[in-house]
Image: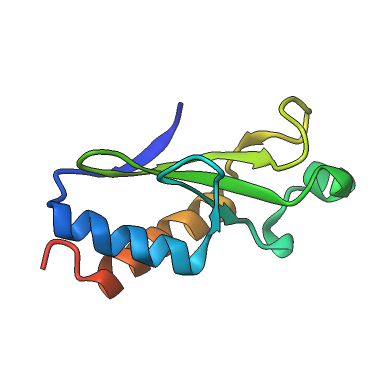
Length: 110
C-alpha cells in the first residue's frame, strides 16, 4: 500500500490530529479511521464517469504513534471497481497539502 506516514507522535499530538480530522473529514465508521473526500475537480476521467461509485475518498488512520494517509482513492459505495486507483499526481498533492495543513495548524512537532 502506498502511504504517507507522520510518525513518532506524542499522545497530545495524536489528540490534536484526531480533533483536526474529526473537524475536516468524515468518520470512517471504525474508531480512529477518517475519510478525506477528493474534490470533484481532481477526479480522474474514469472516476467522473463512475459518479455512482462516489464519493471518492482516501483513508486516514490514527495509530498508536502516527497518522497514516493512504494514497489509494477509494469508492465509498463499492469495494471493487476499476475506478478505485492509486492517487494521481494532483490527488496525491491534495492529500499532502491536507497533511501539511494539519501538521501546521495542530502544531505537530512544534
